[in-house]
Image (cartoon, rainbow, N blue to C red; front, side):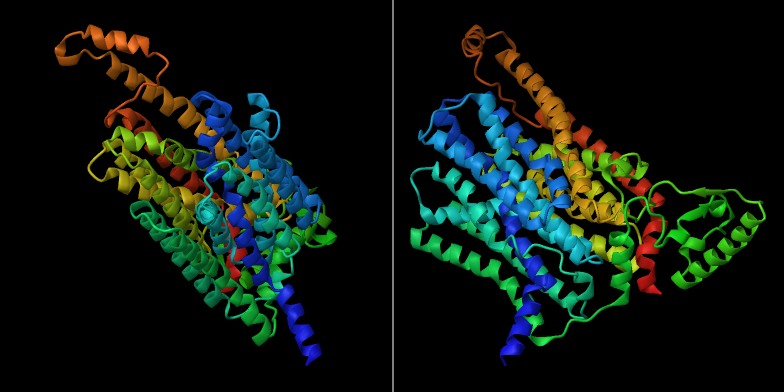
Length: 594
C-alpha cells in the first residue's frame, strides 16, 4: 500500500495537468497591471501629482507589462522556478517600495524614479507569463490553442480576482491595496514555482484529455459569469462585509476546483504514450536552431528540390508525401553524384522548426504576424485605455460598468480564441491565423459601432472589441510556437508583445488624443446661441489649466473609423500569413488526419 501511494503521488507531482492548473493560478498574479487604475488615485493624492504625472506612471506600467526581453532570455538559460523567483522579487521590490513611499515610511523619490519602480514591479508579470506559457505549451504540444487561451484568460481576470480578495480586508487605508499587490503575487509564486516545469507532457496523452479541457472551459465560463454577477451586485446593492467574505470564499472554491483533474488522473489511470505527440515534440522541440533534419546525413539539401517537387505534394497524406519526396531525393542524389546537380548546405531552419530570435526577425512571416498584432491588439488597447472618455462623450455616467464588461469579454475572447483556433488546426490542419482574421474583422465592426454612436453602440462595441482583442492573445503565442518552434519561445513571445504598447502609443497617444483635443477645443470656442459669449471666453481663459472635455459622437468618430480600417488591414495581413503557411500546418497536423 505504501509503495502504491508513493507511486501515485509521484504520478501526481509529475502530471502535466498539475503544472497546467498551477500555471492558471500563477496567471491570476499576472494581471496586476489592470489594477493601476485602482491604485493611481491614492498615489496621486499622497504624492500631490497632477494627471500628466499619473499618465507618465501609466506609460511606465504599460512598458513594464510588455517589455519582456529579460524574462524571455532568463527562461531559456535558468530553470523556470528561478525565473519565476526573479519576477516575484521584482514585483515585491517595485510595488513594495511604492507602498513605503505612499505611506510615508520612506523618503519620496522624484517622478522618474517612481516610473522606474512601477516599471520594475509590473515587469514581474512578464516572468509569470513567460514561465507559465513556456512550460505548458511544451507539455501540451498539440493543444496549444486551448492552453494559451486559458492561461492568458486567467491573466486578464487577475485584476478582478485580486480586487475581490482585497474587498475582504475592508481596509479604510487604500494604500493597503498596493501592499497586497506587492506581497500576494510573491507568496503565490514561492508556493508554486517548483511545480512549473516541463514534465514530458507529450508522453502523458490520454483519451480523456478532451473531456478534461471541456471541464476547464466550463470552470472558466462559470468563473467569468460569477465575477460579473458579483461585481454588479456589489455595485448596485450595499452588501455587508459578511456577504463579501462569502462571495470571496465561493471564488476560492471555483479557483481550486480544477485540481480535481490531476488528482483523478493520477489515482485512477496509467500514463500512456502516443507516437504522434512524440513525433511532434521531436520536430518542434528537439531540433537545435539551424539544423535542417534529424541527423547529419540529411542536413545537405539540393537547390533544385523545390523546383523539381511536383505541385500539391505537400498536401498529400503524410506517408504518400514522404514517399514522393524520398524518390525525388534519390534521383537528385544520383544526379549529384554524376555532377549534374549542384549541392548546397541549407542556412537556418525552416518554418515549423526551432528559430532563434535573430533568425525569426529576418523572416517575412514574423513581421506579418507582428504588424497584424500591432494593428489589431493596438487598436483594442486604445479602446481599453480611452473607454472612460468614450463613454462620457456619449453621455454615460457609470463608466466603470464598461470597464468591467470589456474585462469579461476580453477573458471570454481569450478562451474562445484558443478553442476555435484549435478546431481550425486540429480538424482541418489549416493555419491558426484564419481565426485571427475573423477576430480582426469582428473588431472592425466594433470600432464602426463606436464611430456611429447609435443607441446601445457602447455595449455592442465593447462586446465586439473585447472579444476580438482577447482572441489575439490566445492565437498569436500558439501560432508563434508552431511556426518558429518551442526552444526559444520565450524570447519570440516577448518580442511580439511589444506590438501591443507600440500600437497603443500610435493610436492612443498620437491619433486618438490629438483628435479628441482638437474637437474639444472646437466645442470650447463655439459661440453660444449664435453670438460670442464674452463671459464664457473669460471663464475658459481663467481656467486654462483645466482639461477640455469633448461631448458627442464626433469625439471619437474619426479615430474609430481609422482603427476600423486598420483592423481590416490586419485581417488582410493575417490571411496573407495563412496563404504562406498552409503547407507548414499540413505537415504539422495533417498526419493526425491520415
